[in-house]
Length: 128
Image 1 (cartoon, one colour):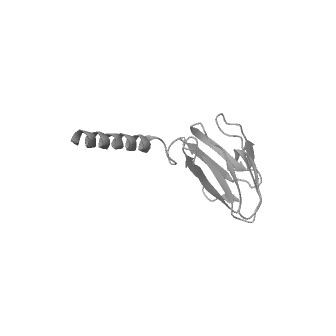
Image 2 (tube, helix red, strand yellow; image 1 turned 180 degrees about the vertical axis):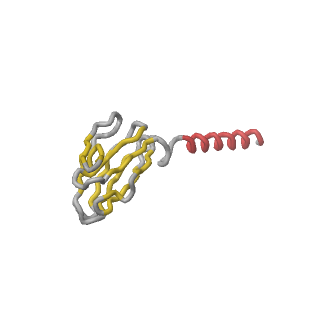
Image 3 (cartoon, helix red, strand yellow; image 1 turned 135 degrees about the vertical axis):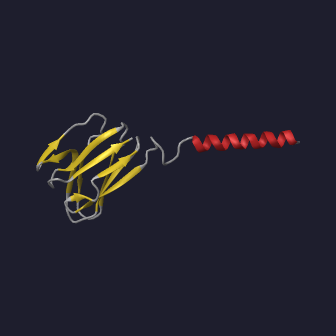
């Protein structure tokens, strides 16, 4: 009887460990979503960190229209760019609570997004 109970407990423990280690909604490659908001002619934050496999949701909280693309502003000049490993981004956000999800970002690295309408509206996306 003790052997049966011990075997059952061992089986439950192994099953628990397999489930616990088997990927959940927060780990690398999980396919989670990170949200960034606009704030007038800027992003609410200048940078965001993602895990590989995550997507990025951009929420337009203000009354301005935004066109988000790959690249950045440099000294008041838009610099569109194609970065290896970055998903292609070409998103139009209408004013007041519109949103779009881009990604997934499947490659580790640092990527750049910008609003082609608003000078110096840059977002750095770091994927690890």
